[in-house]
Every structure is written in C-alpha cells, then in structure tokens.
Amino acid sequence: MDSHACRACRGSAGQLVLDLGEQPACDYFPSAGDPGPDPLYPLQMWLCSSCGLAQLLTDPTVPEEPRGTEPAALVAQAADAVKRVAAAGLLPADGMVAEYGSPHGGSWLGLLADRGLVPAGRSEKPDVVIDCFGLMHAADQREALAERAARLAPGGVMLLQYHALSTIIRCGQWNALRHGHYAYYSTAALTTMLAAVGFSPRTAWQFDLYGGTILLVATRDLDRPGEPEDVIRSLLADDARAGVRDPGTFAGLQREITAHATALHDWLAAERSAGTTVLRQAHVDRRLLPVVIDASSAKQGLRMPGTDIPVAAPAELAARQPGAVLLFVPDLLAEVRAAFPEVETEGGRWVDAESLGS
Image 1 (cartoon, rainbow, N blue to C red):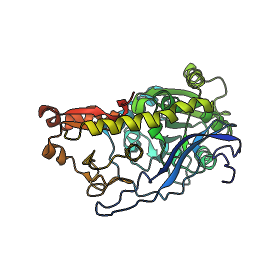
Image 2 (tube, rainbow, N blue to C red):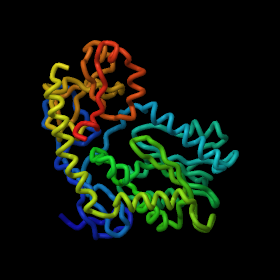
Image 3 (cartoon, helix red, strand yellow):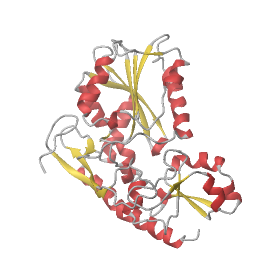
C-alpha cells in the first residue's frame, strides 16, 4: 500500500501496532434473512512516530445511520461532568455553546441549558465548545480540531472527552478498535494536536466510564498563558508509564485478541444450554450464542454483522429464561440488572465478556 499520512500531523513515519484482520463494518446490521456473506474490510491501528496519535490505518466503510440507545451510565457521567465543569467556573452565565457530539447519540445541550447556556448559530462564536466522543469520528483529525478551535470565542474553553489510550492498553481493550473511529487519544498526543492550533490543556477530570474516560479543558495560549494544573502533568506521566508512544507496548493488545476470542468461544461452547468484532474473531455463530439482545428497536429483527446471530428485543430475556447472559459492555451491568431482575430471580447470571480469558 502507499505510505500512510498521519490524520493529525501528516507525518509518514509510523508503525502498524494492532491488526484485527478482515472485519465487517460494526454499524452494518443485515436483515435476519440475508444469508451474506457480509463485506469485510481491514481493521488496523497505526501509531504515528511524530505526534503519537493512534489511528485507523484505513477505513473504506460507509457509515450507517446511528442505531444505538444511550446507556444510563453515559447519561449519569454527562451530568457529573457538567456539574464539575460548572463548579470550576468554566460555564459563563448566559453564554453560548457549540456541541460536537457522537453520531451514536447523546447530547449535553439540555444539561448546559439548565446552566443558562444557549446553542450558538453557525456564524456565532461560542464561549464553550464541547466535544463528547465526536472528534474520533473525523477522518481528517487536523481539519476537525482546527474547525473546533476556530469557532471558539476569545477567552472561551474547549471541552474534549475521550476514551484514554492508556486505558485501552492497560485493560487490554483491543475491541475498542472499530471502523468509523479514526483516532484513539492519549493526553500526550492530544496535547501535541492542540499545540498545532494554538491551544493548551489546562485541567481535566477522569471518569470510570469505559474503564477510563477523560474530559480535558483546553484554551488558547494567548487567553490563559501559564502552566497547566497538576492533573495534566499526572495524565502525561500516566501516558509515559503506559507506553502510549512505544509500538512494542501494543504487542500485549495483539496477544489479547487470540486469548480473549478463544476464551469466549470455549465459554460459549461449555454453556450451550445455558460486540461485533469479538464474535467474528471468536468464530461464534447462533449455535453457540442463539441471540443478541439490544434495546434499540432499529436493530431488532436484523442480525449481527459477520455472523448469523439474530438481534432481538429485551422481552426475549424473560421468554428464554437463560442460565447465563453474556454482557459485552460492562458499564451496563448495573443498568441491566435493575431493568431485568428476572434473569437472576430465575437462576440466571450475568457474565462480563471482557473478563473471559483474563
């Protein structure tokens, strides 16, 4: 293939650090009656040697319309984040806000409206620019960040929320790599990207969401010159310990793929009676996993891409009375246990898919 240009700094020096082989697009859900085969595409992570940004090497997929539902854990974290930002005095009374949200859903505008902020028009300069998992969906990272920076009013603040690369490495979350998610941020790489548009990180908050999520506050260097708070230095030190710029660090993620997929397949095989890429990687079909439950009505009646496993409504849990329910998103555990107590009252149990093989 031709040499890859970094999505942020345009550098060509880098290394392939994670390879999941050929995978279906994660947001492509065929009808249950579609026999396939589904189209497959390379799924690989490339680490830039210049700026340190981990990124998709290539993505020939075409994004589908978002079909997900917003988990309660994400809603609670957003409320917590807005409360912390307000307490830090970063939300001006009667200010304007521009939001760059994730295409998977969720918005902070309602929470910010309660604090007196109103959405800015396209020609207006907002006092606050909030990006909650939105930036990672931009194929051109440099252009997307520059757009956000240019919109911000003088003296304003940019709030960037991201799933920390150090968490992905430390927790073996290889399944975070997916089509449509073009960048995987360390605080170190994001600091370099911000510097290119004249911004610097000032403070940040950490959350347990997805195993480790960061909300970073950045401002123009001319607006608030000086040193960042200790929390930024702590995050940069954490990145260094995790080895976010060392290609060799990612070898552990590559090993986790086989270990996790094998453990999942073996567990399902043992539980016959009793997340997309991982199912294909583990060679799982409906003989091992008879159905995937999803609250999104848009997915129900379809099937998981790359497999023949149908997607059904939550009512199927009560109808099937399963002995075990495999949970692919551990942040949902408290929510689904409260919503479906019958699973445990009927003798079933919830199993964290990420814990298999660990």
